[in-house]
Length: 112
Image (tube, rainbow, N blue to C red; front, top):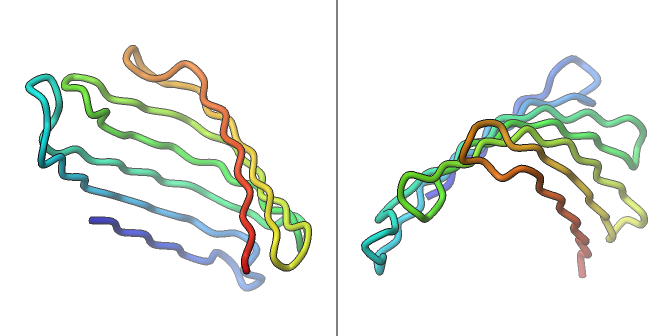
């Protein structure tokens, strides 16, 4: 189950606050795995020009392994190249003892 919410800030609509939450159920889990887990993310995005968005977010998620959680602060950019093509790149640093130290993501979105 997932919940996503976005709130525009200001009259221009170039800044937004985002909250995402998910509850994931693991029906066929092993003894050292969780039978359910959650993910919560809160972020801020701002359009710097018509084709560039910068995103800052905080993420907390339970890993599938018991007693493992991941907390990250992330920074990313989404760049629109054509009306149908978006390139995304981001990096995150872990917060806490059991968190991933560094995460780098790259995405390509194309609308047919």
